[in-house]
Image 1: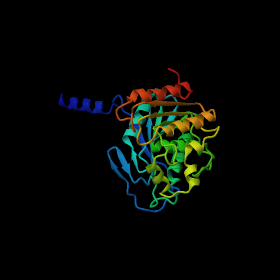
Image 2 (image 1 turned 180 degrees about the horizontal axis):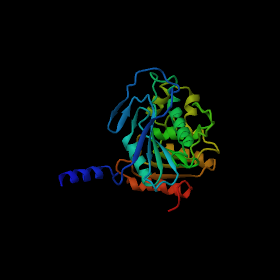
Image 3 (image 1 turned 180 degrees about the vertical axis):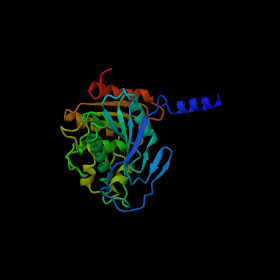
Image 4 (image 1 turned 45 degrees about the vertical axis):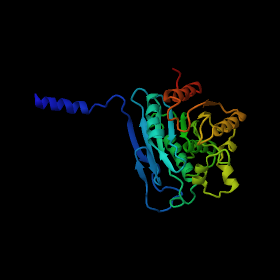
Length: 302
C-alpha cells in the first residue's frame, strides 16, 4: 500500500494546479544590447523591487489552454525610472490578464544610467520597442493576433508605454523586417506623461534625462506634446488625490488625444493616491480596463 500511495502522490504533483500560469523568461535581445556600455551587472532584487537593471528581459505569461482570445499586453512596471516594482505592477497584473484570456509579457526594462548606457534617455524606449517587435514577430507562434498587441504601464512605466505609443515612427533598435513598432492600444495607470516643470514627476525626469536637460529633450519626452492622428487608442486611470504624480498628467494626455479624435477613455477616482494601495479596489479599476478593451474590439464581447 505504501508504494502505491507514493506513486499516486507523485502523479498528483505532476498535474498543474488550477490557477497556475505558464511563465517563461527570455533575454530581450538575441545578441548585443544596443546603446549599452560594457559594465558590471549590478542588478539586485528584493521581493517586489528590482534595482540597477542593465540586462533587460521579457517574461511571458500565457493563458490556460482553451481560454486565449488572441489579445496580448506588454506590461511596464513603474518606479520613477529608478527601480522596477516588478511584482505589484508586473507579475500580478500579468496573471490577471491571463485570467481574462490575454497573453501578457512583463518587460524588465533597463533603468537609465550613465554607467551602463551611452544615452540613458533612449534605453527604456529601445527596450519597449524591442518588446513590441518580439511579440509581433512571434505572434503566430504564441497564437496572438498581431493587430491586438497593446502596452500597459504604471507611473513611470506609464510614461514609457506612452513614449512607445507616441514615438513609434522613430526606430531606435535593429529592425531589418521593418516590423511595426506601434502598439495597437495603450493602458496607462496613474502615468507620468509630461516632464515639464509643475506637471511632470521630477524624479522620473531627473533619472531619465539628467538634472540639466535641454528644453528640446524635455519636450520630446513630454508625451502630451507628441500625440498625432496615428497615436493608438488609450485607456487612462488616475486618482485625483495623487500627490506623487499629479492627475493633470492623465488629463492633459486625454485632452491631446481627444483633440486628435483618438478613441480614449479617462477614469478619475476621487481617492486612490499613487499606486492604488487600498482604493479603488483592484477589480473595480482593472474591470474598467477590460470593459474598455471589449468596447474597442481588443477583447471579445462577453
